[in-house]
Image (cartoon, rainbow, N blue to C red; front, side):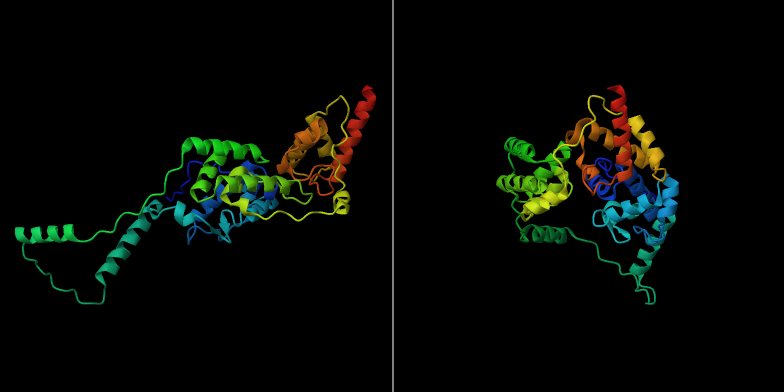
Length: 334
């Protein structure tokens, strides 16, 4: 029987949110596909690859569409995958986890290589017994042999000042999620040589980058620090004509004093968009519920562009149907 190893913080690793945002799938689906990849890579030869992987079969096993599995696998490239190979397989998995037959085969191969078959075995040589004088000579030589001095340790960072620096940086970072992971990544970045001023200046530049009309989705603090994003260059300025062409209003049109029901929105989406997967219907209903209730204050940046943008992932027909139905409901109550 073969085994695969999971590190303690597998489910809390911030890179899964990055993959989920890039693929448009929930985090639990990303973790399920990752677990399937580990099991698949452990059961084939050579281990650690996705040879023979089928998005359709894995999707059927996990109750996910094949397109969702393919999107997750594509988003993992450069994060946990290098082509068809799991990037950290050799570092995370060990040969001791192989089956008993494999361990015996490796043991026999090592014995064969040590014996060098094809050559005549040399006769056994009996060494003379070691005298006390010989052992004293060996001990003296070992003590007098020069030893290289140990490498100097880096001066430790003051924990109290480091915690205060992190609190100041975290307060200026525009997307504050996952504080414990962000604090660990901040300490690691400081140990790698990043200064307090560099990280603060990088957070300020990143806040300005997110205000850009063509800015990407915001990055988690831990991921931003691990990728050394404080070294990014600022985005070029955008002319006023391009800002107006985006057509993004500062606030969406609310539906009055009667907030919509998420169940009602799900029913409208299921009726107007029958080809949507039920999981996508639930996601879109949650997003539209937050949007019509609280506007931009309730919109999660991981969902992509809001409904007032032409690049919104929610079908335009679904948004129009929800607006019409909710508008008629408000008129009926007035």
